[in-house]
Image 1 (cartoon, rainbow, N blue to C red):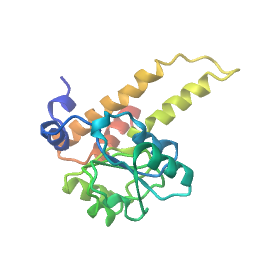
Image 2: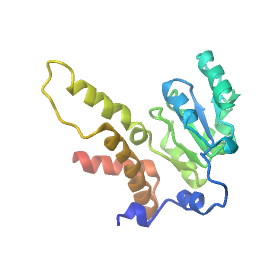
Image 3: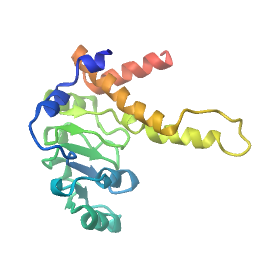
Image 4: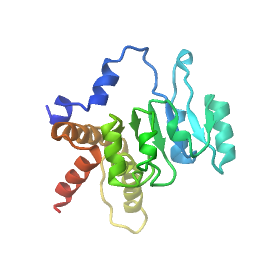
Length: 205
């Protein structure tokens, strides 16, 4: 059994031990484009409907669709990180979690698809000190790179490269995150620090 499974992040323990009906986690996406819209689109049992919030962005039709389809609430961009939800999901611009907003996040985890979500290393340290789990963005959003590479190497005129099934590759993101959280917990470090160490090991730098 690997370290990630033996030593889960303390947030994972809290989520596992918490007594509540099984239902999807409430999330609050920042951004309602193709990636931001996805967290709210997962199916859920009819009796466990819980609010999913979206920020006010230029894609008004997407926001209106989210309100109609999911019963979502809409929040101002500068306040959405303060929502009392399980997961805050930045899916728009980077640098949204600053040393100030990190003290205001009420979610139990920050896990979004935007690049470079942490404005500074100190912002990540603040989240960790407050017991808020941060999923490193370049691990969480790796599906874009994986699918893009597969599409590139299957274009006409290119040498064929065999890839494992896309679904299998995407599933490994989950396992990699667990490994990162386990290493971070074991070493008393932040997940983003553990992720960078692992990345450097993998590429030999």
